[in-house]
Length: 215
Image (cartoon, rainbow, N blue to C red):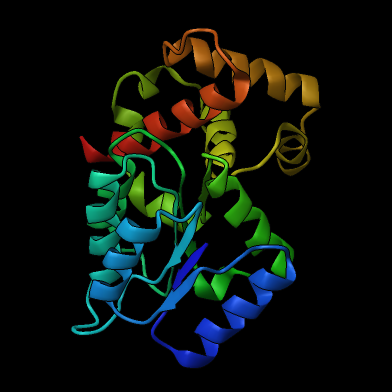
């Protein structure tokens, strides 16, 4: 995997944390141009990328990630940032290929939470902080086909966007797992997702949900 973070202590801390959980860190860079080169040349299985990197500390990390994903569709990227950059976050989700995540640094509370998010993105899924989802989707309920979903189904889909399993969604929403499964099936139907591997349909449903904010 690849890490892009300009703060030395945080960058080295991420390297040691991820190595301790079995990841091989092939590069750890501290600026936007180095990140883009490394993404293209190394094609890592997953990258953890800060948004604001040198030289201007604005949006170099996301710009490099977007540029790399245009050349390598589906290149797994997990953004780890202090801020929600809505425009570029939406662009990162827009290609519909999955393997994306967006976590806020001050809302990562333990190593297992973070490592689970890295693994989900590496496997082609999504890992979105609830605050990021809320900002991206403030008006999405007006858009078809998401307008077909009931409030409960939107709650279930929002939890899916965070990367939660049916069991975790059931616990969070105080439902049975069978009720969550029924809501999930209804979501797939209302979003016109043809039968296929359930994990793949979950990713497609989440991307439809997140991309509604772009319209």
